[in-house]
Length: 223
Image 1 (cartoon, rainbow, N blue to C red):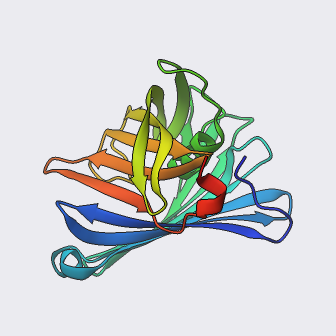
Image 2: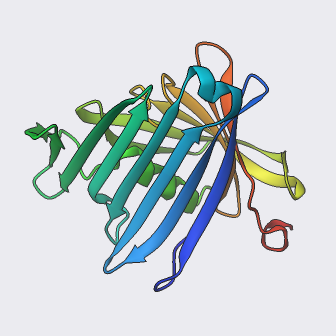
């Protein structure tokens, strides 16, 4: 299980590419904070892509002992325009409270408890899948409602990493919504090695965006 111990933190760094260009980077931090675990993803575009699509974001979610969000904070800056949204997850009552621009909105859930996209990503890393064809259903709050996200274990295959070729589980994630983490995407592929997502790929209208884990500890992940 990927989990921080006491005050320590787990840091995962991803290089993002699009159409063969290095497009951005993501830093995903997992840290213990009192009785909760804090997940934080910082992302930004870089290089040539930044020139025509300047983008920065910081998404922080605090999850409980069962892995479900208690609260989250999403900040985004795109082409000079900043947006901040904060959420409180009342999992027992089945509602999510959003604060944006001083306005409070309450959304009732049909299915709960729910994940947000960040906690669902973390849950996927820790999910034990034993055979190809296996499926798992996540309920994810996005676009003002609870949505199904179906995770499928497609097959075992080798994936190219900074540590060379490694055996990995190839997973498909089908969203019942348009992802905020992978903009305009409703489907993604993940390659998981020893509870680490070492590669991700989101399908876009033009090509696809790929994330590659670049700070792998080769001694830990090699068979």
